[in-house]
Length: 223
Image 1 (cartoon, rainbow, N blue to C red):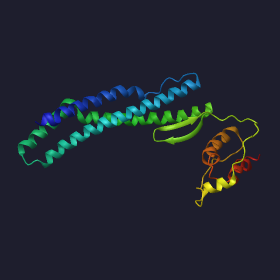
Image 2 (cartoon, helix red, strand yellow; image 1 turned 120 degrees about the vertical axis):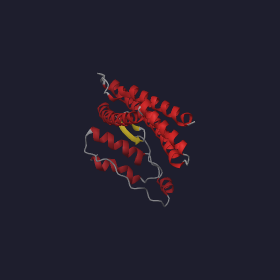
Image 3 (cartoon, rainbow, N blue to C red; image 1 turned 45 degrees about the horizontal axis):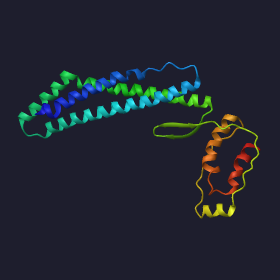
Image 4 (cartoon, one colour; image 1 turned 90 degrees about the vertical axis):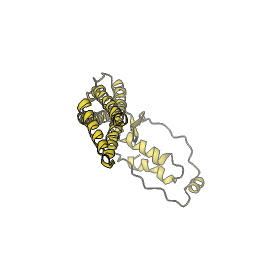
């Protein structure tokens, strides 16, 4: 009975976990970089997705396996029957002997650490390539970074009309706007790209802000 409840599921889980560890070893090695920066950037994004998926699968299988073993140990602790205790203990020892449960768990833990290291390296490489290609950082969510095409600096005439201030003040109401922190602007193009991405999102596109906020980039950049 214990073999049906615990032995086979645990053995199958160990085999699955060991297979995942073996299959994902390839992702612990840095890929051969492409000569083209754009291609290398796409390659890095793909590597990040693959590594994240690998970590997720290993963790999920490992946790399910550990839950089965913990349930088995819990039943051993709570059962009053000596025969049942003996059977559960024998089944646990059998699993350890046949599929090397503890050793596979250790391998999985080590693999997760190695994959996390590669993920950190890939993330750093992604940001480096994004800056090199002029992709402006927009936001960082739980699944990684996202970038938008860079904004080219051109001397164009602003033909847009000023928004109606009465409408703006009406939208503002009595709730004061939140304090915002923008990147420091030093006059170089790269700094401006980062500054403008934040400014456009937090200030420029906010109709509820008064017109005085729209003077900020002019005063800070010396225009």
